[in-house]
Image (tube, rainbow, N blue to C red):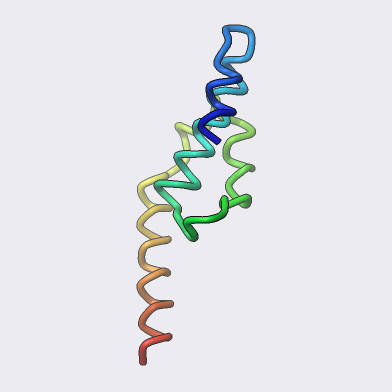
Length: 77
């Protein structure tokens, strides 16, 4: 993914680069589900990158963390 970001970082492709980088951050940092795959369901948020600042990202990350904790608790008990 990083090499693709570098490849598309030319001035005429900055929009593509921003979307790919945002997807990498969403899928690999904020909403990490597996170290070996991407969270493809997050592509919908990257498509309209100009309006992504209006989304409640803190709440979404919090919700994902709570769901992960609850899933882990169900598996352990």
